Image (cartoon, rainbow, N blue to C red; front, side):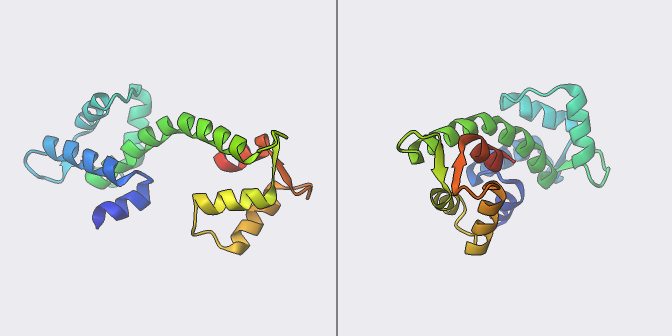
Length: 158
């Protein structure tokens, strides 16, 4: 489905894409397939996303690849993703802290690289064994076989 492809390209949830599609369509009354940057700004405001006019201009320039001055649906999704996904970063930090605590059962302040492999596999089942080993080697530079919270955070947010 096109929504599935959009989800992969933008990192948005399918539900978010459905909501954004409805918003886009309700403003694209003549079904031209695009809306104006001003309209985009209105939609973001309705979604409770605050954006300064300077950064908005920059983002529009970046996203309006064909320079048409009109924002097509795929461009609109990329733009919305920038805001929606940044909002999620704080929530992600919290989740990572909880995940780390969950796996650091003894409260040592570190987890083993074996445990980290399991976490990574749960987060992304597509990772191959080689990729996992590569990631672990990158993080566990001193070869200690353990990863502390800072190393864990750096990896997850890097």
